[in-house]
Image (spheres, rainbow, N blue to C red):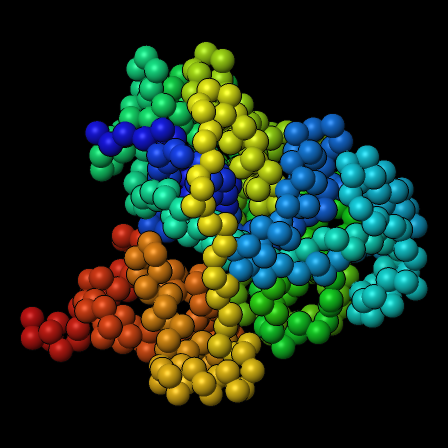
Length: 487
């Protein structure tokens, strides 16, 4: 039995933001994540957009935390060394009949406190985005992009460096309330905690049910995406969203520039029975055709990868009303803080959610500030972004900087080694991708995978049984060919 003051369940962006916020105080905090790394669920499979706050219904908790989180993100990203870029957003009306929707969005944004919104005509849109077809658009200059992997990992690393224990590959199996604390049973050991924070995302309803709170149900809603090659990045400069179709439970297929120079198309919105991140031919075709209505210059030849993510919705298919965030301490189960239905704009709202949860913890536990709290994390600047003089200096000091492993993303051997030596000791192919982008380029690791495997074997003495795509059960090899031939 391991004891702590606060136990957080879930290592997505919200759970890691809460861990980092609580690391400011003299508390024994533990975060449990069932996967072998942080950011492996909804948080790592989204558009990477910092939403300005005009899509969410005024007067809701979601609207309040969206706008507050959006204002907090620039300074938070600066502290954590996470790139953050205000590219602006255009919500595009393709015909005059869609103008009232733009006005409605602007009114909502103005009520919510979103800054700088204006409706512009087709000529002004053309001036901002020459390749976009539009009759008019709502322009939001403060909408921004960031890397959700980078932000979540940075939050987790900063929390870890400030004393939070982050325990991976640990699945919660049962929770019992005993007097003034909770006993949390996992697939490994049990924990005793005064306060439990349920930030389990797609599984938050199941975690709540473990303590008898069975009034919530999560409805998984899948969104599929295409990723375009970097050589098409010049097609757009801003986030480009359409006026959403009336019969779809989402914002329509939007065109999103990424912080790394790609463009994404998506997401779709499809309710499914169980969380499943496969992609479908039908939806992939739909994404392409709808995106071409806004941006005719794209081609199927531009796609380098497709993927999907799943939103934890609190409303079923066909519902016309969006559900608000649920962030509450159940009165019948004091000390158990539920975060249910934290879908978009959860990434944007994460720092504000973390502050709110910390305040709720403070209602029952004394929060004493930690004098040695360090809010900063050293930024990780890609080798290919450095000036030539700096590159030459680094290569002279460490020849591993002079050996390119991933040609598409210009990732060096040293960067792969640094990714393998991450604070959580997560050593698999996806962990390397998330930390240095090796394998995320045009060839999707076709060139660099053998070299990465070689590095993992040589520098970390990993055998074929240790080499995985991600978590246990995703082994890349069954043995060596010469050994199998002998058998």
